[in-house]
Length: 109
View 1 (cartoon, rainbow, N blue to C red):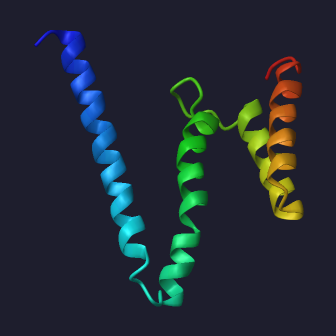
View 2 (view 1 turned 90 degrees about the vertical axis):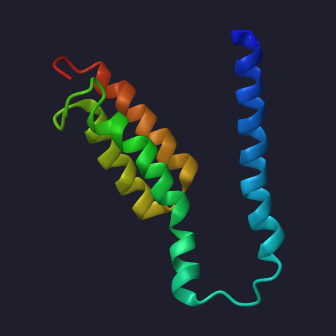
């Protein structure tokens, strides 16, 4: 099997496995009559935890080294404050992006 063919087999197998894993939860979710409140509360936190896991390395280690005194951590703090006060996702993203761009123009950042 050539390298391009093997790559397509791996991509296809990955797609099928990903779909199967997600489909299992959808099929069996209908059988769950009641979910205990602590489990429900924990499941509600998964999207925020996943988003934080994706974003925080880019905020705290943009060049591969820990950098707490830079534009990105300051913009993240500002965006977190906006999210806490307003609860508006679009406004939070906009303020965070605007802060990163604006601080990029400040000498020394």
